[in-house]
Image (cartoon, rainbow, N blue to C red; front, side, top):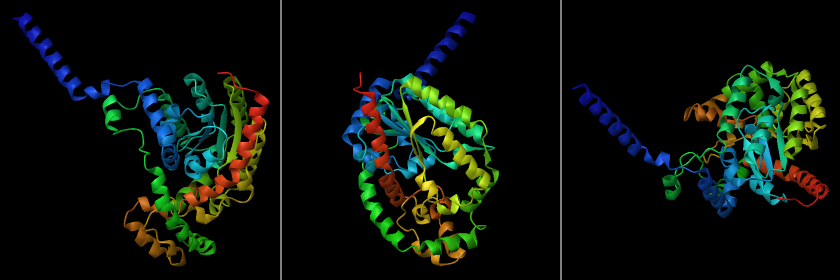
Length: 376
């Protein structure tokens, strides 16, 4: 009797396990080698689309293994929103890629260098996208540091299965085919709309309504709570040491924030930024903070970041109620779509990329010449 019961339980266990396996059988068909080959080919075939789609998405960090770039752009969300990756690639002598995650801090550069070495990436140059918030101690810093490390730990782990790859229906990797066409469609209306925005009207609106909108509250609080991090010299020394071990050369480029936000930083915060830059200069072959010294980016470059077709460019000439009426149509998303003080729209990204790329190119070419022919 007992033997019969045990046999029945065993049979039910295997039947149930088999059903579960059948239901999710696709998830067991994965291979990082197959995935690297598939997405590597797809990126090569649609490189312009890929580069266009890398702005304002996590596409860069999710595909860095498949792109296998020689020059890698690191940073927080400022980085993936503020580069025009198509123009950037056109202006550089080697393959470019991006590994940027919202909330990243300078300490995460050490984690990324470890991953570059462990995964055997072809990266020879690392461009650190710098923003003042990356240099602060804050209440949520440890949360963001660990978030970055969790995502980095998935590098080398397959994300898709054979079935989704065969169908072209990826679940975890952002779609990028058609990205260039989307830019061609949405950029002209953005540029035409920005022509109608007077920066004086924009600033008057912000100054008058700064207490009325969440998008302003967030940055006022960040600046108020941002404390200079005293451990950064040691962190920077560690970055330099790890980079040398990996054979990676470092550049540092300030990623622009709006003039409104840049003017909020306190004298102590500004002094900390300059002191950190002096430390970074010890390990970097290029330090470019020109957009910081000019006081940040034109506030208009932070309008309509997501290039919405129905964006009310004339709202800056009106009162706060008109802006709230537009926001209420799709709150809370539109809180950040009206004006995003630290994320550039594509018009701003194009201008920033155009101005900075030549110095990065020169740095790479000079470093390549000094390094001599590569041995692979």
